[in-house]
Picture 1 (cartoon, rainbow, N blue to C red):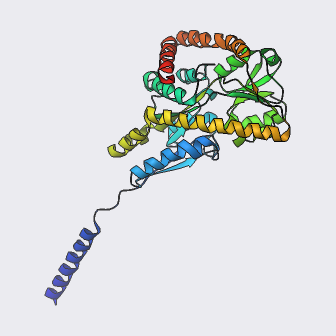
Picture 2 (picture 1 turned 90 degrees about the vertical axis):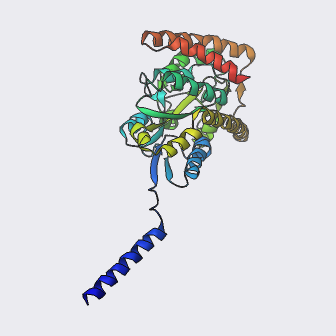
Picture 3 (picture 1 turned 120 degrees about the vertical axis):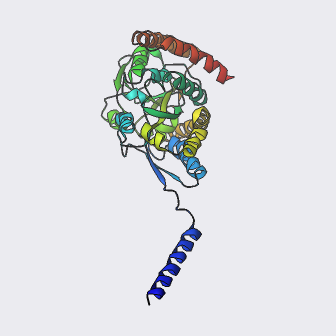
Length: 347
C-alpha cells in the first residue's frame, strides 16, 4: 500500500511538472499608466496625436503597456498637473507651465509674441530648447517625453477689436505672466485664469475677449458666447508631456526604449503639423458658423496694422530676457537659439 501511494504521488508530481512546462512562462504583468490633462476628450490634441501616441506604445509593447487617458481635468486641476505627476498621484501629464508663474521660466519662451509661425515649427524648436535648457533644471524631477505645441492664437470676444486703439479699456483673459505682458503691451488689461473659467467669465462680463485656437473655440462652445474675431497669430502655447521619474526608472529597458522611440522631437513636430492642419480646417468651420448666425466676418489684420501690433508687443521679448537673466535663466542664449532654430525649421 505504501509503495502504491509513493508511485501515485510520483506520477501526479511528474504530470504537474509536465503541465507547467507546457503552459510556458507566466505572462508579464501589464504596466498600467494614468495620463492626465485638462483638455477635453473631443479636442483635436486628445482625439488626434495624444491618443495615437498612446495606442502606438501599447501596440509596440505587445499589450504589456496600457495607457489610460484622463482628459477634461477629471483627475487633476489644470494648475496642479505638474505637482500631481511629481508626487506620483498620476503617472504622466501633459501640463501647462504658464498657469503657475515662476515655476517654469524656461518654458515661457514658447509664449513670446509674434515668434513662431506654425505649431510644427514651434514643436520642433520648443522641444530642442527644453532638452537643452530645462530637462536638468525645471523639469529634472520628471522624465520629459515630448511637447504638444498649439498653433499661434487668435483673438475672440464680445467686443470688436480690429485696431490697436480698440484694445484700450478691454479686459482680456491671459494664461501666465508673459501673455499678461503681451496684453498690456497691446493696451488692454490682462486677467489670468485657466481654460475652464473662460466660458462663465465671458457670460458674466468679467472679460471681453481671449486668445484661443480656432479648433478650441468650437470644442469648448465659445462660438456661442463670442461674436468678434481677429486673426493675428499672436503667440503659441506649449504643453510638455512628462512621466513620474520613479515610474520611468521602474520600467523595463525595452519598454523605456519604446517610449523613447515614439516620443522625442519627431513626435513634437508630428503633433504640431497635424494640429496646424486641423486648426486651419476649424477656422473655416468657425467662419461658416459666424455667417449662419449673422456675426461679422473674421477681421484679418492688414500688413500695416499687423506691423503696429508687432511693434506694440516687441518690448515683451526683451522684458522676458532681462528678467530671466536677473533670475539666473539663460534667456538671451535661449532666444538666440530659438531664432536660429525657427529659421532652420521654417525652410
